[in-house]
Structure formats: structure tokens, C-alpha cells
Length: 425
Image (tube, rainbow, N blue to C red; front, side):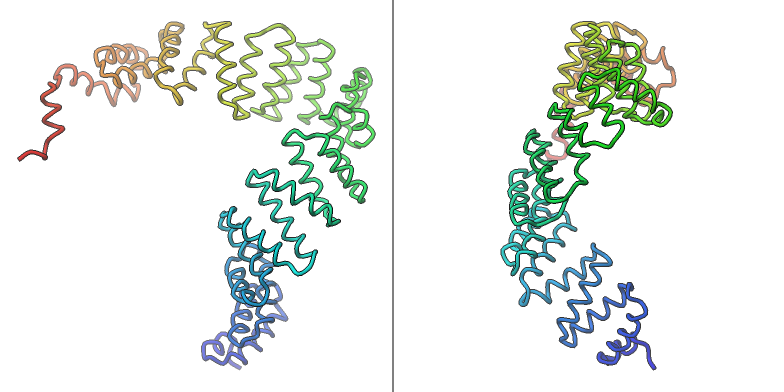
């Protein structure tokens, strides 16, 4: 018996189809066989069977563009709902999310029953959320809830949007509605929301998480009870970042600021460069009356959160409090070097006043002098840099060139000749 591939090549499609079906019965997860079956079924005009095979491919490989494209062709005239769903999935895979949104809107319209409409509406809601169209996403999730589409993620996704946009009470109402419909697994998320809403008593009633209970007790002012619980759990959570943040909170609330800072350091070992580290430090230094350190840490916190303008403002306030801190002056200069090079020079000059051997300041000031055409002053900075670091790469690459430029200055006429070279006969 010739192989299925040979029969297909010979155009004996009926025989090839039967052979592929035999192979498929022993290899139900083989996408290549499914692809051949779908292809031959289409040739033989067995559209329903081709649709089943291509759908089976997608169940095994949700990112198979070919299968979606074939299903679009098959369903173009017979099933517009499935046509738009497949089109939407192709656009998602191609990261064309606006197109995908339009496709899923049409899929909702073309659905012949509520179940299909809700399935498409759920994807549409997630697409709106991903595109930062929170209001549209909320509308779709509310429609799903009103239709009693029982799927836990609808409630948790909607609650996350409300929480993210500052509507904590709406988020709480959403998860309470989820509980009414039997989704008790939302308890921990609901407890976190109650903490955000300054209702630790309700959070405590819901949570089974030991660390969350400790947080609730401290928020309720029951510091001794919280510490007793932490002490009994110390060995269990010794390597847990959240545990150390709770200890830091306890010491902060009991005015033991040195111990609070020590626990922040422990926290940072497990969560390096976390914004929370700088937030906790800022709050502690603020309570201690150390304004300079507080503003520096608020700056680092906002910088990591992506609020660059707020961060720079905090750094500038710290600079007004102490303009002799080399680390701070360097940080400000380097940030401005990426956003406002001319303004950064003021701080590189200040850095050089504080540290006359600063290689960074000497090079940045030399680069600035070249930009404005002051080659003599540039060479002055380069000589100082050369004395500090004779093998500096910047010196090796530029020193001879600048000396030559100073010794052999070009006249304005030379510049004009170069500008018009090749344009005059």
C-alpha cells in the first residue's frame, strides 16, 4: 500500500484521506497529520470535517496562524461568528490589537446564542483592558456579570481595573458579588482590598494568610499581638521579604527606627532594587526628621515607579538641603545628561569642585567644551583627566586630534570652501 503522502502527491485524495485518518487514530495529537486531513477534506469539499480538523489543531497549538486562516476561509460564508473570532485571533498573534478589538465586536454581534456572545465579549473586555481603555473594559465585564456568565476571572479582572483606577469600593463590591455567586476563592484578594480601604477588621475575618493577619493586627493598632505572632513564625518566614517588611512596619509604628531600617535592609536582600525599599526608608527618615535622606529616598522610589519629573523634583529639594553630597550631585548630573545636557554642566562643574579628580566630571566637561568649540578649555580638562588616568580611552581617542586642531586652526574661508566643495565649477 503506498504511503498517504504518495497517494496525495498522485492526486488520489480519497485514498490518501482514508490513510491519513488511520494514521490520525493512532496519533491524535500530531498536528502535521491534522493539517493534511484538513487540507484534503477541503479539496474533497468536506467542509464540516475540514473545520473539525483545523479546530483540533488550534486546541493543540493556539498560535497556529495557518489553522486560523483556513478556518476563516471555511467559515466566511457559513459561520460569521467563527470567522470574526479567527480573524481576531490572527490580529492578536500579530499584535494588531485595535484590529482585534474591531473583530471581536463583530463576533459579539454575529453570535447566534448568548454563550458564544459572552465568550467573545470576555476576550473583547481583556483586549480593551490591555489597550488601557478601562471604561470600555468595565462596560463589557458588567454586561457579562448581568448575563450571569459564571467565570471567576470576570470578577477578579473587573476588581483589578477598579482597584488600579482608584475605585476601591467598586472593587470590593465586585468581589463580594463573586462570593455571592459561589467564588469563595476570591477571599484573599478581597482581604487585600479591605486593607487598602482601611478596614483591617473585615480583612482579618476573611484572610487565612498568616502574614496578612499580622498586617491586619498592626493596622488595627494591636502591635503587641502582631509581634507575638511574628516572633512565633520567625524561623518559618526568615527568608520571606514580606515578613521583613512587616517587622519593619512594626518597629516603625513603635518608634524603633534603627531596627526598622535594619529590617528594610533584610527586605532588600530578597527584593533588590524594589520601590518599596526606598518608600520604607523615606517614611522612616521622615519620621526621624532627616529631611535630606527622606527626599533622596522618595526620589529613588519615584524614579523606579517611572515618575521621572517627581523624582527630579525630590532630588532638587535634597540638593537645596545639602549641595555637598557627591553621590547626589553625581546622580542629578547623570540624569540631566540624558534629558538636558546644558543644564547637566552646572552639576558636573559642582561635582568637580567637590572632587577635583572626578574622571566623570572631567570627561563630561571636556565633551561640553568641544560642543561649543572651546578647544583650549577642552584641552585643559583633558590634561587634568590625563593626569588622573593616563590610559583613559577618551584621552587616547581624542587628545592628538584636539592638539592638532588647536595648533592648526582652520579659517572661516576653509569652512566655506568645504561647505561648497563640489557645487562650484
